[in-house]
Image (cartoon, rainbow, N blue to C red; front, top):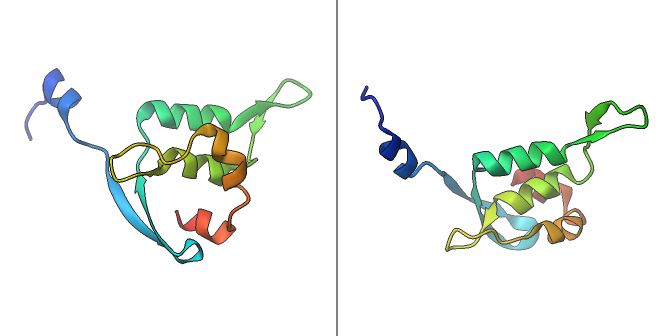
Length: 99
């Protein structure tokens, strides 16, 4: 295996996408893996402090948050914003789980 340079790492095309059928919505969506920054934000939003000040898992709309981060349009841009998460959370649990 070759030793990678800074340039080869920073220019590598490493984001995988997959088209996922969502029959509940009548079509397909394109799903992209998270960037490092997006994953950190997702994980940070998945934690909250309880009344004792201890960190605990925040499962509230977790699947909707993940869908908002991962579903993209055909140009590679996010299809949803963080402001859409509450509305996405109202969609079919089966569809969100599949994505």
